[in-house]
Length: 125
Image: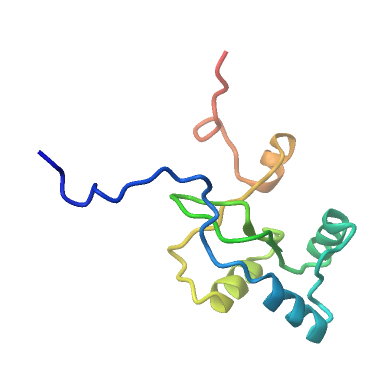
């Protein structure tokens, strides 16, 4: 017996199924000096912008497909000021319910978050 909807199945060769907007991005970079396309020092430029309190968008190729797909398009910003979260949510038309995923080096976690014995992550031995 055949299962409906399974007749046209095929194996995915990659998860980057979204449209590639490279040409549109490069055109925008020509009009807006705050947009940097193909920087030779992307990490350094991103770090400098974040330290200056700016949000940074990292764009690589096409948008990926799948649950919690991250990496090809990311927004990076310092979590120090509450206004950053509000500004990004407003700009992207997001609700407060849609959380951001913080990335913090393990040795700096207690400086960024309120860590105490009740919520500390236990490491596997």
